[in-house]
Image (cartoon, rainbow, N blue to C red):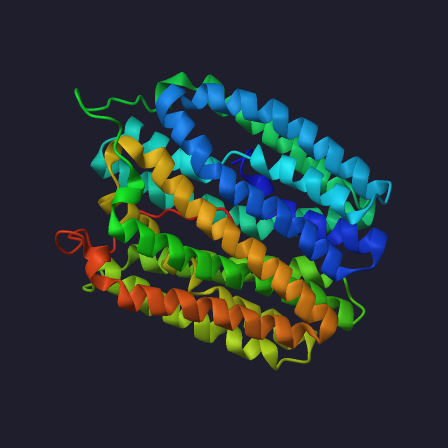
Length: 387
């Protein structure tokens, strides 16, 4: 949990720090997007390496390199370096950011049996929602009460401590056991995995655009401190819905549930383009967050049933990667639209991202079912990403 806190903090920290020093949401969105894009590109590579050489070696090596990249990024922003230099530093930080979400899902699948695995994934979902509830608030408090750079410093410390702690827990580490005479199985060979990856990119685009919408909306009302509150309230809706979703005995397959939840996810963002009052926004962002956890739970449950068991670290890393790429794109596009127009324009971009996920989940029903329908209805087998 310590190592994963920065998942909910890095982008917001970048947006707040760079906008504070430069006054430009476009620059802030570009740098944050560069970090997320590089993380998305590197994450499957790190996951594949973990499946081959061990998570421990990848975690320790990446933690050292990430510390160097984050330090360079902090210095370049504080010294108001040229935009290209900040982007280079952000790329270095992103490329060395391990997907804790992916690694932990693979560790639970290795460490416990099917019965306990359901409970483990339920706990994972609750912890992730808690992180996305507390993380933005923590960043906002650090940036306003300590220093604008304090958020990124906290991300660096938490990532390092979490990486070392997980690396030292040897009992849960997955062991790659390829079939004799065959190379390691690849997650990308499964059509349903591709459908999930692109759908996650659409959802990620929405998440990135909505984060920018919250920050731009707060700035337009001269209450920048409310940005973290809005983003955290989204996690409140997600957490509540995740608990309800996990406790219900759904009759629909997980593939159909993915289509339903992505539809609700898309509709939930539409009202954000019309709201004027901060008080009303507090209510509407909770509503907008209601479908997040159920959609990600359905997607992750489907992934575990579709992907080869010997490539789980890689499979979850691909899902996280495409989600991060979507968040990066949504952050960049949302930042540009917020600068050129208003927070409402960024909100409509988020609606578009959700629509992509909805179309993919509907069109890919056959691939998502694989050789047959998912037979485990509505368990608490929850797994959330990493935007």
